[in-house]
Image (cartoon, rainbow, N blue to C red; front, top):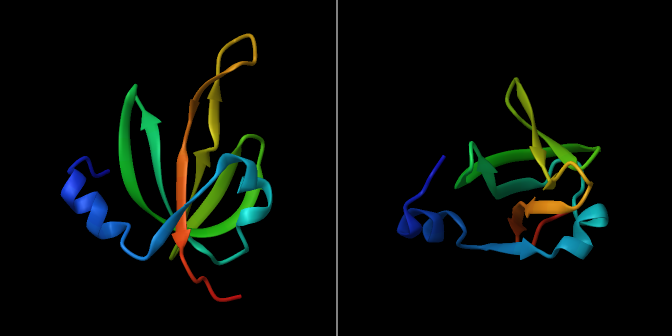
Length: 95
């Protein structure tokens, strides 16, 4: 997890943010995804990994032999959204 804004800017050079409305169709298997999400009530940047597949309000990434889930959003008990993660992919990702 990275919190230094200068480091985050360098990491995101050549990447573009994916708008929330684009997320369901934005990622192709193997796309490298970097992200900002909330963990333990703190927002942090992560270098991410390669997109694997979608889950229920989350995406699954992998890097070498490690696989993990990143929430697209976090919800309140009533189902309303309380936090939305931000996702970034390369500006000119090849198919």
